[in-house]
Length: 372
Ligand SMILES: *Cc1c(COP(=O)(O)O)cnc(C)c1O
Image (tube, rainbow, N blue to C red; front, side):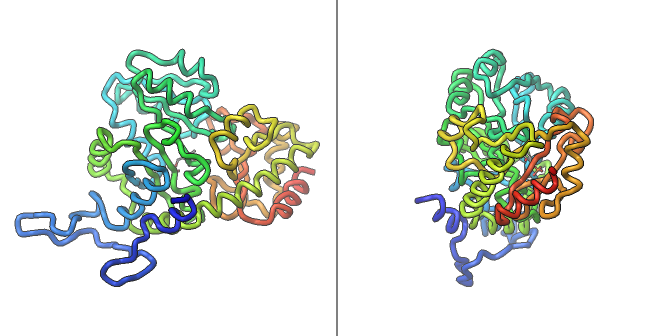
């Protein structure tokens, strides 16, 4: 079945009791069990699993082509649960350009869990290979990466991971399954911040892990989520499921708009660099073109004149909103170094743009007037 059809139907079987076409939200925290606590309806308590969450998990798993999926309260909830499956003294490779709180998680908590990590430029296969140790258990990647839009060759890194006996995890938040399917390219696990494009409307937080194979990770992750409690609530599950129905449609428009904005910005004399993998000048363009259907709605730019010049642009936009996060219907702009704060590795003149679903002409005009 094609992606567009799957997005509309996966997880959306009509309710067998009422025939409702839109799925019900089961807010109940508990479910009737037998006199000696026998599970009789398939559910016991909301923190273990619940029917609305099950629908979202089956939809995420279908869209990514996985064997199973687990949804969490946030992308970081999913990420933390994944790292907690590792045995002490495991070694992890993370990208230099990675979502800021993954870097903070590694730097602050890995030592407590007796995990070691090396941070490398995952664009360089030689650098990834060189970082592999006998106890390397995970290569964690993001492509395109946040915020520098670096592209990693998923199939090539999957081979390095396989040879090392390590899992390859791809944070697929920027691309979404509508544009890129890492499990088909050899990854073992896909992570999503469903807060972003999957939810798609800037009104819900969630995270997800999709597994290529159910064993051995599923039961460990299920137990960690149940004990530690970073579970996706029924209402959030329902909102994210609702977002998935239009995901392929939205990603097409986000991508077309972003391509138009990126091309226009390369012509603007106030802009030093545009990082968008859809531009032939992007160093990862060819790999992105091979592993992505389109190039997505995220980009970053370097503004001539440094920190102050970049902040000035954010202060002058009228259609773009100055806000963090991404993947909603409205376009957002953010000075990443000031958002990330101390320890940020973002260039001081970098702005990150989440291109929304407005008309591209209005977005381009807004940016050009703000840059001028
Ligand atoms: C937002 C984001 C995360 C973290 O997800 P939350 O839902 O905010 O916890 C991880 N990776 C990427 C690429 C993100 O953009």
